[in-house]
Amino acid sequence: MKSDVKLFENGRRLDGRKPDELRKIKIEVGVLHRAEGSCYLEWGNNKILAAVYGPREAIPRHTQNPLRAIVNARYNMAAFSVDERKRPGPDRRSREISKVISEALENVILVEKFPRATIDVNIEVLDAEAGTRCAGLTAAAVALVDAGIPMRDIPVACAAGKIEDQVVLDLGKEEDNYGSADLPVAISPRTNEILLLQMDGHLTVEEFDKALDLAIKGCHIVSEFQKKAILEKYRHIPKEVG
Ligand code: UDP
Image 1 (cartoon, protein in one colour):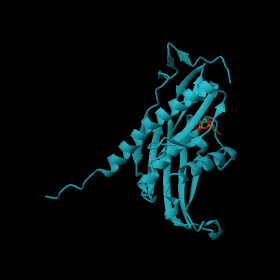
Image 2 (tube, helix red, strand yellow):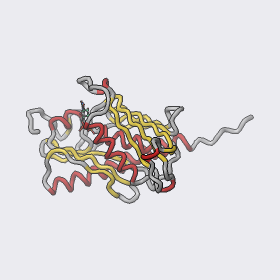
Image 3 (cartoon, helix red, strand yellow):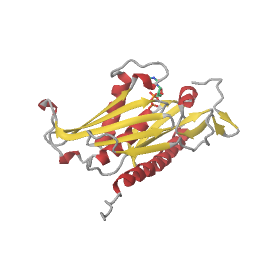
Image 4 (tube, helix red, strand yellow):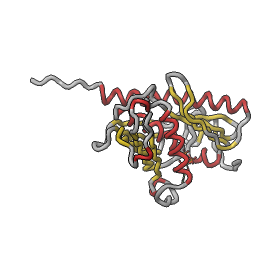
């Protein structure tokens, strides 16, 4: 993916960020009143809504697992979320992202507490600017907390990548288009266990180690934003009357 587009100038990236700097993140908890739990997240120009329904009985019954809940994450990119209108509905990419996010969440949710149930996690990308699977998983994790779903930890995701021979954190749109590698990572921040790891492009083993390290550092920063947003909603003690 080499190109003539200049992604670095005087040690700064196109949007003025340093190599190890994240885009701006804003998280709001409990934005939908019909969902059990929800989250609205802005990450750079990504705008994402996550809504959790359940645990509820899995239907049709043949989908039920008698020993545990199934986690059914559905990632959807709105037709208007990208430059070139996306054809509505699921495609190969959205199915793949839904699958990897479902599997990542399944590993932290205490699924054995809810036999025969399903936990549905809807991730709607309203505005996309690269890194939506990480932003979607991060929003879904907050919505799961809001829904009161018991989890071992609050999962979180962040990508690192390579542009012009430098390893950088959290690729933006042009960096994703013209850079040479993208490495989305999701972890359980308490243990640093890896829940999702994908790679697009090429890196040397040294660069891979560096990018993985950087992505995990990014995850820990994003994790603080998640916790702050959750506390913001739940620390309010009702005011005394009179
Ligand atoms: N994208 C797009 N049209 C599509 C799919 C993706 O314009 O049908 C853009 C979108 O901005 C997305 C970016 O390409 O965020 C990178 O997509 P990728 O598949 O790498 O996933 P992401 O980085 O969003 O997790």
